[in-house]
Image (cartoon, rainbow, N blue to C red; front, side, top):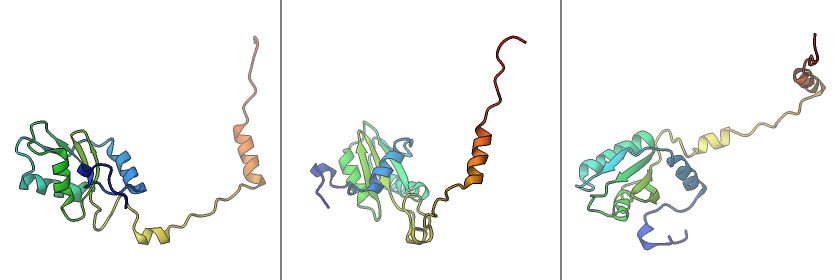
Length: 145
């Protein structure tokens, strides 16, 4: 695993295709948890834990009056079991925790072996003739009647 570029970003999960996908999916999310002037209290930690259990991918918005830095909060959340920091962007932290029973973003081993891609079938002459007749247009009427 390569070292993060900045020591402040050491809590980020390693760059993988999963992280890239999560960053893309997290872009459109609205913040579920907001941290205000009291900082990260125990109730905020509980709320983040419950939101991660419900959604797997959670955006946390850090208010400008928060006494903790975004990197301190990211380390605090990453210290919890199974929580990965996907992205720190501005005053927003994107968190991910895989659901124990029904993961939405990661494929489990059971579905990988069971879902083999079926070979694509090439259409025969009947299929080509059906396509050709459905694409045919009626003749245009031009001129005066």
